[in-house]
Length: 105
Image (cartoon, rainbow, N blue to C red):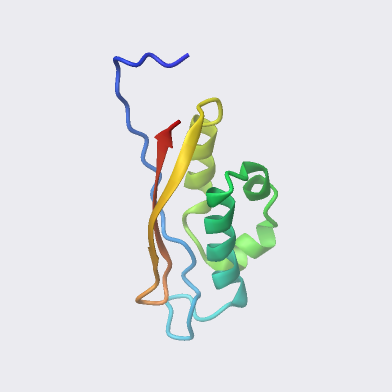
């Protein structure tokens, strides 16, 4: 049960794929854009199971640094009814940047 008179914040930080373009820090890998889109879609649909079952080889090929911290955050939120709000996604330097917050529903 949530104690509503106490406020906490949990922040999970990490970049999405580092392999979105040939001039990306990790070069290009098709798994990069696939990973970024999959994470966004899974969060939008609140499909934690899909994220947990994501192929580890695809995660490695995406050259990301957000997957583990995202799973940790989702574990913290597991028993709390939340609604994900995606604020932005951009990849100006060939690295994906996703900003999301979770509102308590």
